[in-house]
Amino acid sequence: MEKTHRLTGLVFVFAVTTCLVAFVYLQAAKGFPGLPGVIVYAFAAGFGLEFLGAAWTGRFSRGGHGQLQN
Image (cartoon, rainbow, N blue to C red):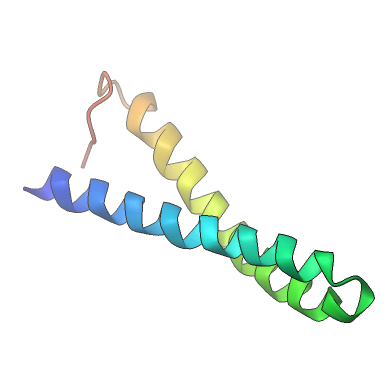
């Protein structure tokens, strides 16, 4: 059950991060007036990407053979 919760959390963070990256592109398409939005959304997306990168590599670096570890 705990593994399911961890995986659900990763999927949720992935979905939110994907939306934030899409918002970055939408704001960038506006040109210079969209610059504040680019900064804010990129900053937030950076945290999501860092979390996902650490969680993904942590899955495999502890000898879990593809299993989510504690």
